[in-house]
Image (cartoon, rainbow, N blue to C red):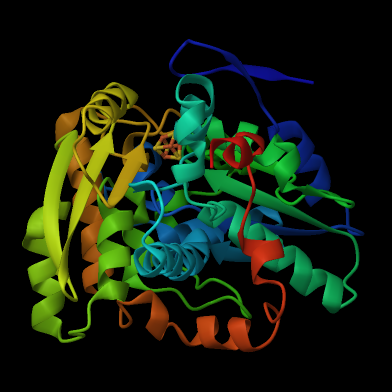
Amino acid sequence: QCAAVCPTGAIVVKNDTARVWALLDDPDVKVTAQIAPAVRVGLGKEMGMEPGENAIGKLVAALKHMGFDEVYDTSTGADLTVLEESNELLRRLEEGEHDWPLFTSCCPAWVQFCEKNYPELMGNVSTCKSPMEMFAAVIRENNRTAGRRKAVHVAIMPCTAKKFEAARSEFCSGEGQDVEYVLTTQELIRMVKESGVVFSELVPEAVDMPFAYKTGAGVIFGVTGGVTEAVLRRLASDKSATALKTLAFQGVRGLEGVKETTVPYGERNLRIAIVSGLGNASALIERIRGGEHYDFVEVMACPNGCISGGGQPFAHAEEQAERSEGLYKADQVSRIKRSEENPLMMELYGGLLKGKVHELLHVEYPLAKGAE
Ligand code: SF4
């Protein structure tokens, strides 16, 4: 087994590039991939493109050139997360008796931090799997029902924390890990270079069916505030374009480590906090312990969210802002901007997910039960 040093210098992490190359060379194995939102704006500069440029089409083309059979976009998994997380928030609001706030759960480093430092809060962490794990469970189920040949799923992610998430027992079925291998953006860059392809000259390609639909809401998951904005789009009763723009300027965007906003919902006002960086998360938790009320709190372990994940090429503040801009531009040109309007969602909930929503899209972390 080969190993690479974590960019933070804190740990030695598993490097799976050799294993993935071996799989890609095996004609009996079908290899699928999903690409996280932040990756598309994180590799451009290293590959001869503009900093923050959205490289999703070229990424798909590069993965196909390397031998991946099917390539998907984790933004589709993020659309599932938006629907499930907003349902969870609505259910809590209706029931009213829960401890508040509801914390997001898509960042595995935050979940692990909470388990270690604030186990009593694990009952407040959303039961939603991360977009990567939701999507992987759906892809596995689709392969299983189609009686597909041996299939292996690889996720291209902005951080090494996703490797640990993939290996957690909660995300393993009888067939093994739902995500067998996680490649960081940096590992992928190395593999693309090894493949000999000239990335900047690739003709962009689209992701594959049957999971080709995604929305702008799913794409902005890669930057701090994106999850909250996507959930608010879903909750908003006014679905007009003006309402959408108003939401964007309601305090959810921007690269500050702590953002707060109040959004009217029915007869009440929802108090929302968005934090990135675990120091900021701890400070907010102390304020909550001191009696401050929040209904919904988004936490991302990396400052500014996944755009500056530890598996991405290093970026100074200016480039981080360009990556953020790259994701918002991708949202702007998306034909569908709300997760509930993604036609694939309707198809999945009416078919593959019928009777399996809890099993495929939710997780029960061991400490969550005791914390309730
Ligand atoms: Fe990974 Fe950082 Fe994103 Fe968390 S915020 S999922 S640690 S890149």
